[in-house]
Length: 310
Ligand code: SF4
Image 1 (cartoon, rainbow, N blue to C red):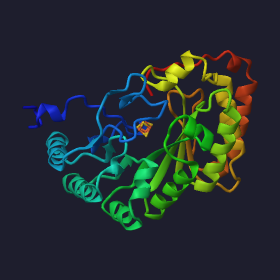
Image 2 (cartoon, rainbow, N blue to C red):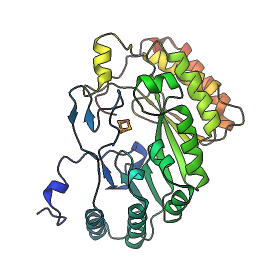
Image 3 (cartoon, rainbow, N blue to C red):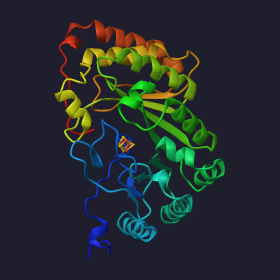
């Protein structure tokens, strides 16, 4: 028996990922794995090259989630200010379970300031407006959703299993329920061939979606992915840092001038650190910064980071 009083099987093979911005949050697993698991660039829960399951999809039993929360309450007392509901898409869990978990978090950690989770667009779309409103009322403040690209072709090529329209619909639906949304864009996801399309189509989706926040990260290809294979066989060409910065500049330049959202270029895979509390106010400043960076001869010499984790 584990120290939490749990069966070791429940803790085995545990993959707990969270957005970098949630580094100091209490992380509590709601789901494991990913029910989709086919994206060509993702090797977190499923090795798409070998068809090996790294972590099988399941919604974790409520009693295990409660035991973990009670354990963390004993360890940290009430001093928890942020909680992240982990798993590829915590929102794939039944609404009833999510509400019970949110209520338990509020009961054990009454000072909690923010509860967040990842959310796959199709899981948002599967819930009714009323369910999403209830989830928000019981405490969910913000979700992180992988838009990855606004290009239909690139989403299809990457086997994302969804469309730009679904992404826009899901974001609008959850924001209408009162939940903020932070969307991820993966720079370089179209490879050299579709770099321009990736940038312009992504800007179009952002203009339509108007998320609370969007964040950039840069594609790094893991050996557990089909994209690794595509790269080795010359089917996919990596966009070098200069091209990544150009993509980013094109996205920012193509944003509507009245688009108001927070933007963070804070991921360690990126080549420049900057953030904006409101892109409407900072758009020209960011364009200037990126243009200056592209003019700098040192930028052409930058090497791709080739990180083996995201
Ligand atoms: S990127 Fe997200 S949806 Fe795609 S396989 Fe990975 S966890 Fe699942």
